[in-house]
Image (cartoon, rainbow, N blue to C red; front, side, top):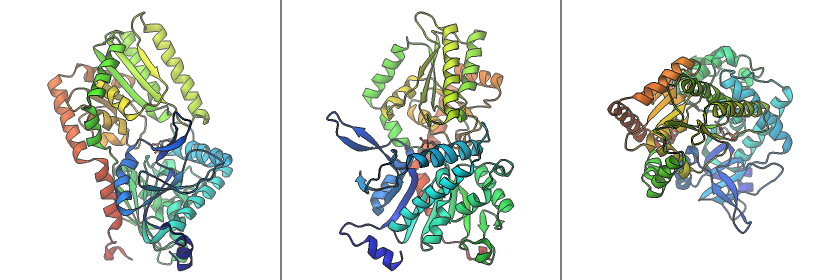
Length: 491
Ligand code: G6P
């Protein structure tokens, strides 16, 4: 940190500069109201914070992010020994940066244009403004030579902004969602600025090798950097590119789950009892199929319902013998495409249940809620077949959680080949969700699989998850970020 800046931030008695900083759109906490009406913060569920919390606590790190409400400025605070640095968003930022550019431009563009992305200059202007706010907040609190790890598509300009303000920092970026091929990425009017924003990082991490190579192909095509292997090298004169001359390395680092925690919860007697209760409440069907998704058009929920509906209509599956539980947690509810999807899914569920339900049994138990982790594990345990049918998905951690929860090797996973998880969970029944007949036969294959065969597959996948958990993900990324560049790459 420049001396004057450092003095400014260390003037208080409390330590205000950090050696390790995570920057993400959201802070890893949710505000909860106690019985007495008192508001407090609780750590949000999810792999990222689980993985990073130990590193944070060890290195006395900080997390920079938005706390989830608009028009409210909060002072830095501490939760679970993590220093939280809130970045405020106002109503306009929510509409233009979050719902607009992040979730109606980048999200559909990066998920292979499943719905058409919208390009609006006002959204882009606000995205730049908010990214600058995140970068400034980080630059202010980073200690000299600190490591900063920026997360996800909402903050792609932060690495370059941060490097310009603080060339002393080691900067990593991780993209949790897919990175599109140059043909699709080329639609973005601000493609060059986004790529240069990312290239401000020393290491840019992706879920799949295919994402890293898409990124490098885009770098080669749309910036003046030279791509050599996994490196994007700036032109010899920094002025020519207008950015600091850092070399950026692209790598695949597939994210994972806290496998041990899931397995421990799966052995919790209360959760096991709850799983039994769920089965009973559904009328003890022979087979429970399960879908768990944010209500998002990338998840292929309609395709899944279509395949399931046809299996019912064909008589391959009978209501009473089987039941589909579909958890669809509310998400991005102000974005029009999400509202449309909700209507479409609810219409399909209504039609299918109207057609196939009996007085006693339902075809689909549809739950438009989100649930705490313990209830999710009970649901995984109650289910026989997990259906993950995304049309495009960066990773899909639900697929991994289901496998990790079945410590007795029961159950089977039907998994879309368009998920990052398909690269690792290769023993699942892989399906193409666009191919409804293929998906129907995939579901039937999982349903009729010889238990010895499915147990062997589940065991192998679980072993993979034991060896590749989320702690290993963050360790490998951070070790790679700490590596010096090989001298012979410097041109
Ligand atoms: C995906 C993204 C995350 C995002 C999450 C929930 O997993 O990769 O960055 O936080 O969805 O979406 P939300 O818009 O509610 O943060």
